Image (cartoon, rainbow, N blue to C red):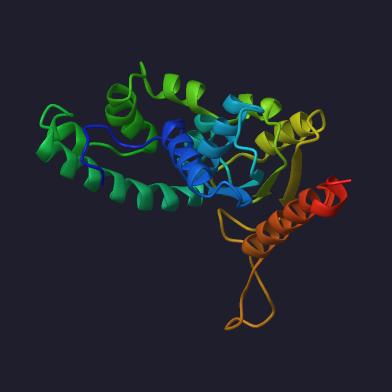
Length: 239
């Protein structure tokens, strides 16, 4: 929990910018890569779209896993069927945090309204929207979704998602595919199964293989190697 009145939210990119600029300034010779998962992936993609080419030179690649590219459709999807199990898990945590925050900031929202939150959209209408300057949950979703920003990304970025992700309708991935077909910076890895940020594989239950971690690590290694190979050596550059 932060100590400010505000929370975090899935369209807030200033924290990402602050951390990246701080690290790149302190380690100017180190290659960097960024990875985000779920709502963190949404923040990352929105940030990259906002910045375009205005990024530290040592940032070589990015990866976003199980991103809810369209927050409105994601909120509706998670309120249906077995996906409601995810919603219940998230809401238990969010309500508790809102109640803790309201002790410090009593004008945050009436205790009865916080207790009455039953869906993620309720939470965003009661807490996220008013607290962060949005008119409503829908206004927040429209202004914070990463989908409209994908076409503006200019750094090599891996998008790893599963078609069976319970937090996103599959047709949203079709729209991402269409955008990616026009943007060579985006590399898609959309698999049939993997759930939400799961991607657990392997034939032996007690020896699982975590595909997402391997996939992202290999992608970053590939991008680091490609950029290093493209740079002239000190000997070549002095001729």
